[in-house]
Image (cartoon, rainbow, N blue to C red; front, top):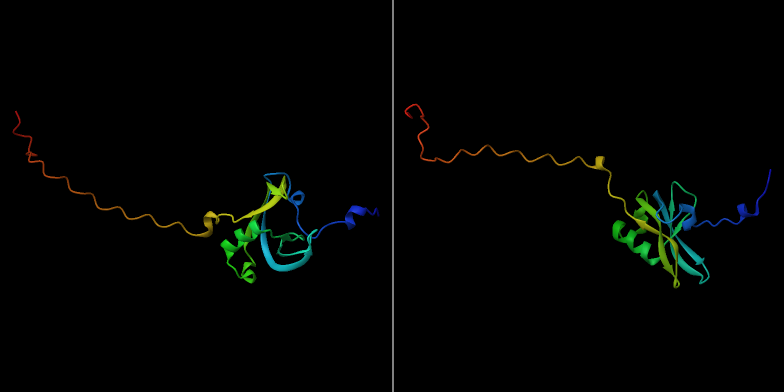
Length: 140
């Protein structure tokens, strides 16, 4: 069995490289949200979303937090079971452009709701009386 040092240096948080190149995206189902303290160089406290289909959590910056809050509400305990798309975009981080993670809410599937029944067609309108005699037998 070969041991690699890089296997022991894995972050428990997602980064852009975990998703792919700019434009790559992944649909994820939320499991829970936790409060993570001592994150990054500034030792910040951030919300972290954990998913059912990956082991890594997504630390929420203000932009991603606001997207999820506007879609799912302020009570983060209610976010479980929601579907989000995490994608890679070029972002500004401390004055430098680079790949970063963003979230968006996918549109509902087409089969999620039955389409509305078409409105019934109105009965055909009667033709207006044109004051012409419909009997053409006397035309000679």
